[in-house]
Image (cartoon, rainbow, N blue to C red; front, side, top):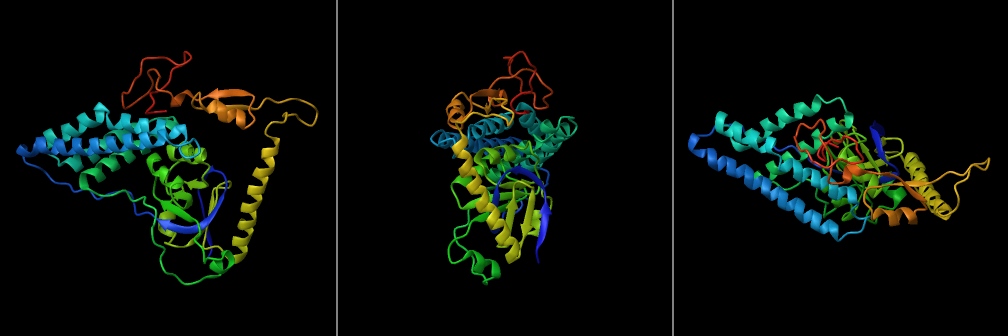
Length: 354
């Protein structure tokens, strides 16, 4: 039966493929009390897990350094820096030590308890963008828990296609060849996004997230069709269902009929043709019908992005997004990560909260 799920449109384009469900990223955490003699060993367990995640992020950044901007945009490196800052934050580590030492909580329980304490501070923020930084904190805590428990990341490209019955959609799209896959998850971290350029995933859908979430930012940079904030998508969609992502409208169509599939297939091809036609206009003057010239300026994150802006036909830089630089000054930051160098004389929150 065909049905649709509505979410937030964060990355344009249309993707058609079969659903790959990722199990909930949440790992089960045991709650129990420890003996006083176990305090040091429990604290050490948390530190070992944290250091393992730090090493993983450092390796990712090293691999990103050898990739082109289309494979891994500069934002991804900056967002991984945010995760490193959160991992090394004193409020997080000191809070975990407090719960282990004073309450005799086991390491996992202490870590999730401190997560809840800091998360409430983010929830109380008025700024939507700062509130969404709670998701980054939850993602890094989840990674530490997985490292402590020896549980692998759930976002792994499938290696074997399951045997299934032939449907009308299969016949329409000639399913004798491999078709694209659509990843459906509760949430994705920026590091998970690297899977997309190294796998057959054509797009993704998440239950949570907003337009300013880091997952959405990376999806736009990589030009991956995506819909976030789709609520119960991971529960409503079944493994191997045919799924259409309309990244322009923020709509997900599940188990589409042959007619709907053909319609979106036409839209997908039309979008590709339109993009091809637009490339012919890259280096022509931007002029309105009444002869008024308009400057086409680019938004960039790093100085090296200027070359790509020129190639895209921009005549200058309209916005240099300094939130991806390493500097800022005091802001309303619950993580207390404060830098000392001002940017253009404006007050900015730290990089972990932007």
